[in-house]
Image (cartoon, rainbow, N blue to C red; front, top):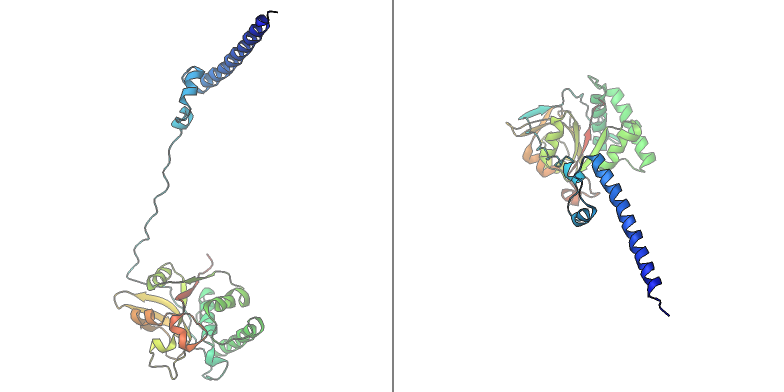
Amino acid sequence: MDTSAPKTSIIAASVGIALLFSAATTGVVFAFRAIAGLPLIPIFAAEAERGAPSEVAAVLPRTRPPTPQPEPALPLSASVGTVPFTTQAPLGKWGQPFQDACEEASVLMAMAWVEDEKTILPAEAATTIRDIVAFEEFYFGYHRDTDIRDTAAIFTSYFEYPNVKIRYDIGLADIKREIARGNLVIIPVSGFALKNPAFKSPPPHHMIVVTGYDDVRQEFTTHDPGTRLGKDYRYSYDVIDQALHDWTGSPETILTGRRGMIVVSRLR
């Protein structure tokens, strides 16, 4: 029996269907390319172009990633303006809780600056410090020698003021940059390393408010609540560089504490 005819017919029919499909596909491709305004090239040439950039991709605009802009040069000096001052013992009584209230007093000065107050009345300051201490005892279980993280919580939880941030592993340039931006800075320091002659007894852990800097004199302007002479007290860059350490929980290891700061911004 001769079976070649049916096989030949099947093969011919398959080839015909393939050609029809190819023609239809080619027609679609030609139509698309004509509408898009692209050259009318055979589908086989298009197949050869696979792996090369398409005409559509070629005509799309190429954009470069933005070039990082360098930080602007800092001015030789800067200040955040008037910041009301109080000692941590506003009524002159240095017993507890005021003996260890440098953090509370620093926050109180910063909040007075935020609210654009001109002065801090001693009696009101003493009452507020006592209230903050009670808040710390309730929420933290202690109030003495808070690190910058717990001190920042006084802003956010007691005063319900959100415009504060904590930064660690900083240098003097970071403090200066925030001051130049108009932000107030609170820094944790070793009271021993400050070598302030006005201290009757230098505190192992201390906090001060930085209100300005001066590159010509190489000094920071601060409000140091640890002395009644602390208003606009100037510390040299070198002294702050040596003293800048967060509380570790022990006077023996204070100089190994991380270098950090609390940045306070006014609502804008």
